[in-house]
Image (tube, rainbow, N blue to C red; front, top):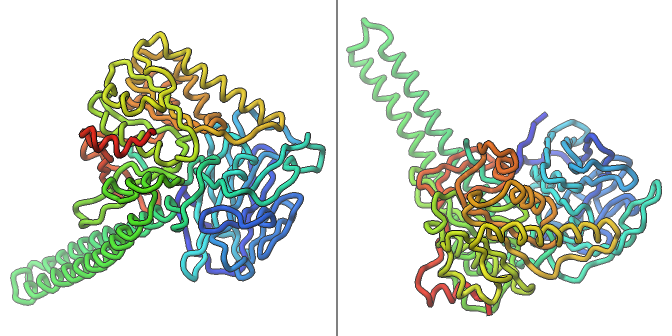
Length: 535
């Protein structure tokens, strides 16, 4: 049985797959049959306690069975979900550790251990998806602190106010097709779009933009791993063959030994040349695909030179942070993108907030562009005034003047925490509605000038921020090893963006190393106005 890691995938070779899960709390299992945009087609595509079957997908007891040949032909994937059983108490820490299992044709095939750390009460554990004519399995582990209702809303299922659950009843009272509001969606390992996503803008028609770019990245990662493996094998074989050629002192300097050495070198060179040719072919195909995608992607996912920035605002399910590359593997550069809202905060690692201003400006520009249909409000903590040049263009969306006095930090953060607490109370009482605003918290110069309680407040927003549509961006030195437990835990929960050249990141599929060039907002006022479209 394969032990999967987040983002890892494998080809399914059988016809029938069965999903189950276990945890320290009582679980409900369910499934969503989704289209290219990761949204359901209609009411019947959510298979759960009160609706146990749709084409090719059936819930029986504590497991979901998928007959791949019978799944509707226009389906992109089946999302396999666990959530807290309504009638059972859930610890304050959420579901805790969950182990998802998949069997293929009654043979145990894969397990995926998920350890959510942000109080999630609903998880997309696995995704069974089409890739060409094949079916594949991906380990997802995407959590929702807002619970099943938020997960369902994010994937196009409209959820009525839940009734008080009785024993043996599901808390989702009624389901119907939603209006097209869409989804949002040491060694540093790049984590993909399988992080928390909440309700937001309408998705793209080009194969769900974020998903498409991550599929390209996956293909690039696997091609890179094949090249690295071939190079390593060729060199190991060369060493072995050269050792054999010179092992006998009596023949070490003979023409036969020299011929053996030359033959071994040719075999090594030929194998590496073939591997590099295959990788170059793959890279050229992916570069063509990326160029085609850039003409269709919304601005938040496109390059700065894309004409999308001059067109009508187009919503998106993610933002672009920069490009990944490896000079030793050729010219291919892959967009590094993440889902929005940023319910997993971005932490921009830097000794100087001022030096990171172009990076922060680029992130803000893309966050504004990702959700043009909703009002965006930005809370900016800028103790050193590093981002003063951004204040003018951002004035229409700032939620008050930037905070430049450390004494004002706690009240501003507490206001956000109280909004999240009220949203959680509304959710718990059955009166929750998806947020109508996109909130952005920019906390610069962290942790200097912040109290321990402020780190705890931001950690609270990490758990409940999706309920108010919050994206969080932290700017400061990496505090993952801080002596303050609250600060260290917060740092360890974030997605870190290194600003020091040469810092490697490792892809989640093969562990291959990549370098990251972060997007930078141009300093020219005219170009900044083009990208920071706030009016």
